Amino acid sequence: MSDQVKFEVYKASRTSQDKYTYFQLTASGAAIALAINQTHESSIQWSQLPLAFAVIVWGLSFFFGCRQLTYVNAALNLNMELLNVQKGSHSVVGGHPERIQVASEAIKELIEKDGERSAYYARWQFRSLTVGAVFYILWHVLEVYFRT
Image (cartoon, rainbow, N blue to C red; front, top):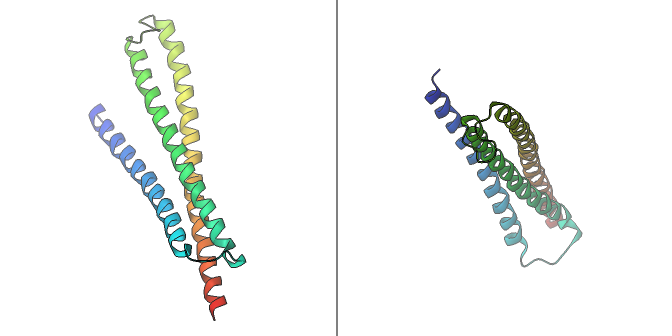
């Protein structure tokens, strides 16, 4: 497989992952707005506790999504630095082979850590979005029950 094909596949994968993260950010923001809109004329009652939990975990989902994007961007910036180091054009490392090797290994470790952190936050973004939906449904069922 040529480098150009690999690059195109990587680019498509990265774009897809970003879209999924932004979709979840949008969903959590919209869910919070919906909850606020549905209760803006309500008085506070114990039956709204599941809705409060839903809003809290949707807020966490939004936070986790933002953190995930932060680590993705950090890893991408490190990848650019790695390319400069390997090319011998980095301002600090220069073209010295031993320095290039040491710097490349250090940057690869940082990229791996950022990738792990990004994956961690991506998992928790989805989990908290889902948990918020469960609390929302529970709240809705309670509201229907108390109205009858």
